[in-house]
Amino acid sequence: MGERSIGWVGLGKLGLPIATRIAGAGHSVTGYDPAAARLDLAREAGIAPASGAQDAAGHDIVFSCLPDDRALLAAAPGLMASMRKDAIFVEASTVSPQASAEIAQAADALGIAYLRLPVSGNAAIAHTGNLTCFASGPRAAFDAVQPVLATFTRAQLYLGQGEEARYAKLAVNLMLAVTAVMMGESLALARSGNIGWQDMLNVLADSAAASPMVKYKVAPLLARDFSPTFSCHQMIKDLDLILAAARAAGVPMSMTALTRETYAAIIGMGGGEDDFIAPVRHVERLAGLGEPTI
Image 1 (cartoon, rainbow, N blue to C red):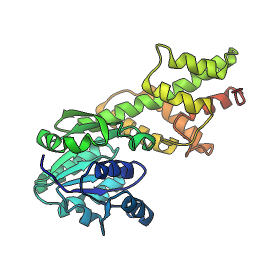
Image 2: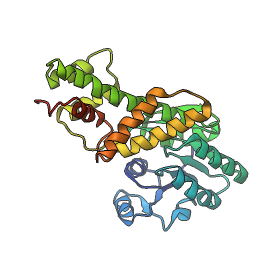
Image 3: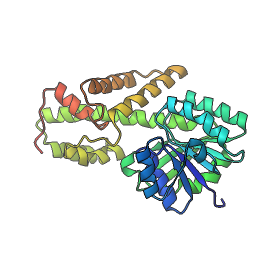
C-alpha cells in the first residue's frame, strides 16, 4: 500500500508498545490517550500526541486498543463519526462478539471499513514484535493494513468477514486460563510426591504437556515471580466474556466456569493484580504447601 497516516486511540500497556513499533518502522503515527502521562511516553517514542480522540481519528488508518466493551461502545461512535469515508478502522481490543457486532453495524451505516484485530500476547513481549493477531472483517481492509500489522506481529491470521477474530481471541484466552489452573494442580501434586520444584518445571517443559505458554512460564515460576504480564483481574474479565459468548451460542462450559471461580477466589484473597499464573500459588495454599525450595 502507499504511505498512509495512522491514528491510534488507547496508549495503555499494550497499545503504546504496539504504536511505538509502528512508528519505529517509519510510519507517521498520531496517538491519543486520556492519561497525560501516557501521551508524554508516546511523544518520547516518536508518536505525535493528538489533542483528542477525534483528532486521532482523522487519519487514513485508525486503530483503537481499549480496556473493555464499555470503553469501546463509548468511544467508537465518536471515532467513526470523525473518520474519513475511505479510512479503515482497526479495532484491537479484547471485547465481546456482541459489542463488536454493534460497532460493525454502525460502521456499515457510515460506510467505514471495520477490521476486528484482537492480538494474542502481552505487554511484556509487545515491544519485540512477537505478538500474533487475529483478523476478521473486509478482506480488502486486511490486505491494505497487513504491512502495518507486520511491524508488530509475527503472524497475521485472517479468519473471515464477521466476528470470527473475536471468537478466536476468546478461545485462545480460555486455553491460557485453563492451562494456568491445570499447571497449579499438576505442580502441587508433584510437590506432594517430593519432586523438586525445578525438576518438575523441567519435566513439564519437556513433556507431551508442554506448550509455548508452559515453557514461557517456567522461568518466572522458578523464580516465584508473580508480577503481572496479564493480571488475574484481566483474565476474569475475559472469562466473563467467554462464558457470555458460550451462553449465547448454547455451548456448555463447565470447566471454564470452574476456572472462573478459581480466579474469583484469588481476587477475593487480594491477588487481583498478580499474574494470571497465580493459580499455581493458590492451589499450593489450598493444599497446605509452603514455598518450595528453589
